[in-house]
Length: 256
Image 1 (cartoon, rainbow, N blue to C red):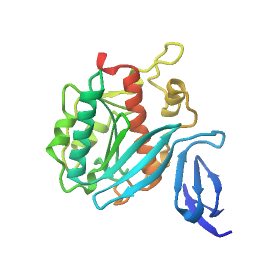
Image 2: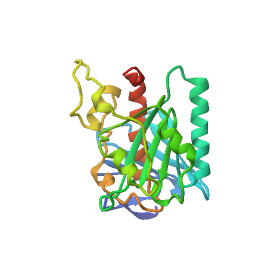
Image 3: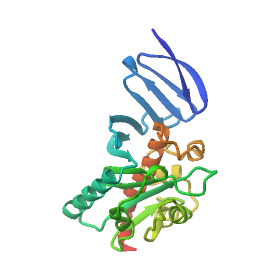
Image 4: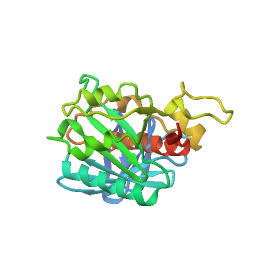
């Protein structure tokens, strides 16, 4: 057996390289043969399943990842390339036009580094496609993105997002976004009561039936201006946008 030190959430654990799973804090770190696959999951020790992420491909312009959200897979593209952003937008608009019976719903998330008031990343999710745009490393943004974010026919939804529009406006690209709905104001629990004061974890468990899915404060406060985002950041950012999309469709936000 070969041992390797792995740092997870600021702690070092000795783990074996082959077929060993170590749980540290709220995260599970899995190392398989030859360290070919790294999986980080947002979960507590008591969860038998949890969201996981794996890298599918890395290119000069972007990275492709797959997230398994309790058996439901979606793709995550991380990029700072205008051409990749444009292609993603064109693909989801085509998909929505021909495959959806309702107006376009977009799950939206924004991340920034605490010391920096500007938005560092913008996460968008439509269906099984998620895009993480590294705004702080984009030389420019395409006009297609500006149009996509301000289309009056589109529903934009996030979670605890009162600052997001302002952060985008103050970013180096001065992005505007249409009316950004906060999911907490529209979902209800099983008793028909509003959930405006609920946490992300509570909302996911009540509305989707999955336990232990949370937005970790340590990750939220990490360096989102980094040139290479790590798996923890990508997983949390994409799960945030994906859940907002799924529940936005579930509550039929276009009817409000």
